[in-house]
Image (cartoon, rainbow, N blue to C red; front, side, top):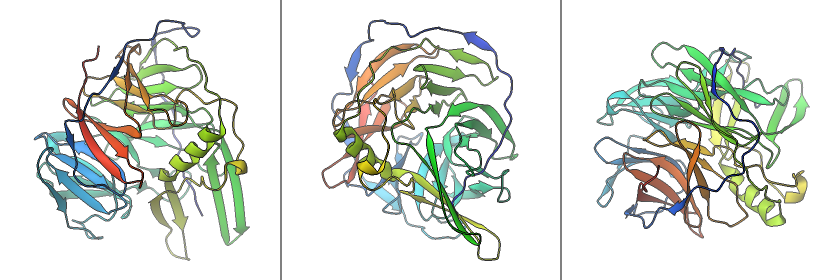
Amino acid sequence: MTKLFSRSALPAVVLLQTAAAPVAAQDPPLTTLGDAVATYADGLGSLRGVRELPDGRVLVADGLGGALIVWTPGAAADTLTNTGEGPEEYKTPDGLFPLPGGGTLLVDIGNARLTELSDGLAFVDTHPIAQGQIGPEMILLIPVGTDEEGRLYFQQRPPMTAPQDSATISRYDLRTGSVEALGRAKLADQKRSESGGPDNRSVRVRPVPLTPEDAWGVGRDGRVAVARSGDYRLEWIEPDGSIVRGPAVSYDPIRVTSADRDEYLEDAGGGLGVMVTSDGGPPQVSFRRGGDGMAGDANDYTWPEVKPPFPAGAVRVDGAGRAWVRRYGRAGEPPLYDVFDTRGRRVARVRLGEDRRLVAFGADAVYVERRDDLEFAWLERYAMPPLP
């Protein structure tokens, strides 16, 4: 039986800046990243996480290859070989996030846990991803980001007993276990299906393709950047709970073609599936990639007439506190990112190369994944372009 459970209340917020209808304004400057300054020498099965360490080395999580790699750009790479299910081992590395003192938080979906690594990459502590008893109060700690205090930010979804229209943006303290609700994020339209009998019931709730949903990311200072899909704009949730809301951005919706439908289904295999099972004993929670349920022919789904402004997971915050939002383009078009300042104003646009996507930021670097014709992932490092 597949379920996601969570529930939370929201604090009051204060609106600091408002804007009404979308404003027709001249597009900000368009720039590119130029040439890559370094490329990891080997193709990866799946590039799940990238984290630049304070000393310039780069941690790379290859989920499909089951490898956690330590790469020195322009030089050699090593692999942490302690794989397994023990307390100082990993099984399926996924996301990588900074912790205080140069440490790293590793999302290990194969062992269904979060692992703290020291600045010297020693295994320090672990935390289960699934927190609490199976039921409405259970939360799943799938980090979207961490702040400089080591708190992690995640999307606390409602119970999957029926499709829901929104989820809670929450902050979790690894030391105390406290959870704080920060805001709400609109979810894509969803479709629920059910099969099996009373003793073997399966419930699946999956997104309806290309329907609008909010996306968000976290800065190291604890500010949360939320791209709103209703009237495309960028909001900042401040650490004190107040909101800075930028002006709405005018855009021309892109019509959905057969090529767009095929491209969406090809890219839909990286979703995280959550499975809750019980054989009479304590329920077990497991995770796997490729579990978003999108498969088959495009004719099996209902499609909207136009694309929303951006896809799920479109927001990343760089070291200067700017929010980068990936835009939906036409099928096969190189990706375009809108860049927003700390007041929610769109100040730049950055075009990546073909078959590339942004995966992480370093101190003065942008890390990009390139996919080749054989679907291997190649990690590229670029210098951060000059931006407002």
